[in-house]
Image 1 (cartoon, helix red, strand yellow):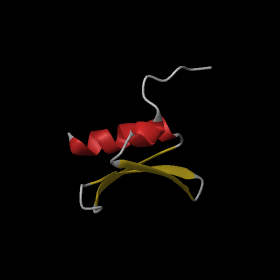
Image 2: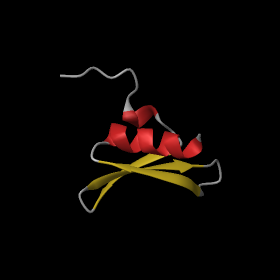
Image 3: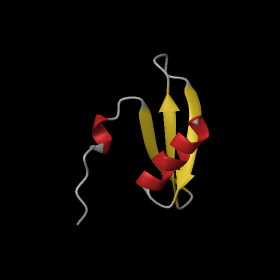
Image 4: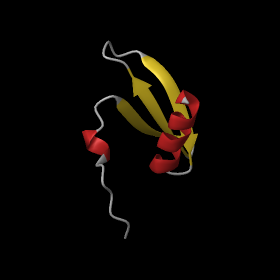
Length: 55
């Protein structure tokens, strides 16, 4: 089992969903607007894809 330093439930401005057999991580601003999305085969891959889109 892989231990995680960050609990997904602690991420207040990232929404994780499972849509059409794919994880979607969405960055949400303070007003609730969706800013950018990342996609992947796991929630970590989706967050990494979201991060790649920011750089």
